[in-house]
Length: 129
Image 1 (cartoon, rainbow, N blue to C red):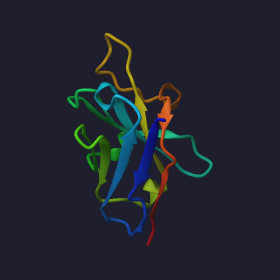
Image 2 (image 1 turned 90 degrees about the vertical axis):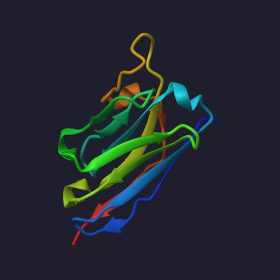
Image 3 (image 1 turned 135 degrees about the vertical axis):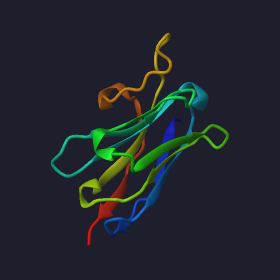
Image 4 (image 1 turned 180 degrees about the horizontal axis):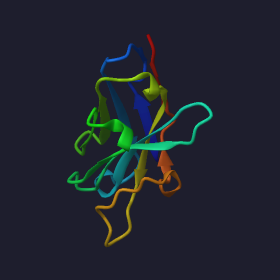
C-alpha cells in the first residue's frame, strides 16, 4: 500500500546539476519526515539529506557541502533533491525514505537507515567524464 517511487537519476558529467524526485503514496504524508540516502557499490548506505515533518528542519550529510537542497511538497506528496556541482564520488543509487518520528520528537531527523521503515526502489546517479 505504501509506495515511494524515485525518478530523475541519470548519467552526467562532473559539475552538472540533477534533480531527483520521489512520489509518495499510501501514508499520511504530512506526519512523516522524509529523507534521501545513497549507496555506492561495496559501501554502506549513507545519509544524504532529510527534512522534518513541518519542513522547518533540513539536515545534510557532511559531504554535501552546500551543493544539495531537499524540499517537500505536501500538496503533491513528493520530496525532491536538487543536486548541483556533482562530483564523481556522488555516483550511487539514491533512495528516498519516509519515517514517522515518535512524539514528542516529531521534528527529529534520523541519519540511521534502519530507523526508516519505508523505502523506494532507488534511482541510479552516475557522474563521470
